[in-house]
Length: 260
Image (cartoon, rainbow, N blue to C red; front, side, top):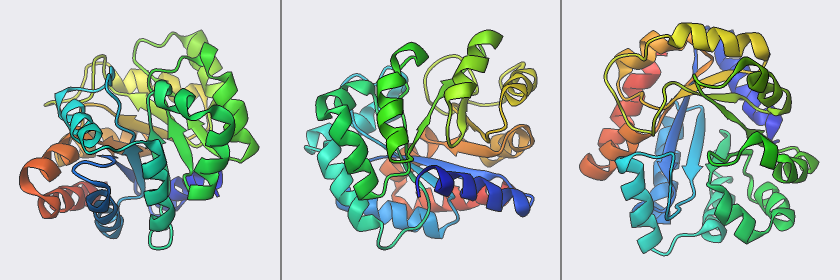
């Protein structure tokens, strides 16, 4: 269902007076069987959308936690082809939207023409490409639009108003609002000026706003939730999973779900 599946996840939470919970997992850390189990457990714990990170050797938008996870997955021989096989098998058991987060190089190496069809066949609903600028995004957007998959753009507090309008005009699914300048990784407290920044994004689009980067604790999620439509948590979950195991990561997810 692609774009519609993503939209439906936000619409259903909005009807309940809640916010969507979006969780990032690095696909293949420590292996794909473990990732598939984690996806099933996270979905059962109330996660609304899961981002599956495609491991890459130079993840410039990511902090040390996700960099380390990416390196572990690469060492295990994980690549985009293997991830798509996993997603296809997961689709029999998991109905929530699944989005790939990938740097552009693995997608170009795969081939954009075949990528769109293979993403669609596997059951992927959309894609986030953190190192792809608006000016260079037309080829992948055109390919994915043919099969109704979302290319979800990122905006930041530093995005100028005119550029924000242009990005919003091309967006599908939701807009990923980076909550701060810098890389991924849990931080304490809320960034200054975030309410005004998210209000600017809200004025530019009718699409849902997903807020991510730096969110690691339920209290942060609770404070940010009224400002957007979804909360995105990555490093905190990846770290909990790696250091304490899946059960601890699922408990963290459950505590986040409760405050949203």
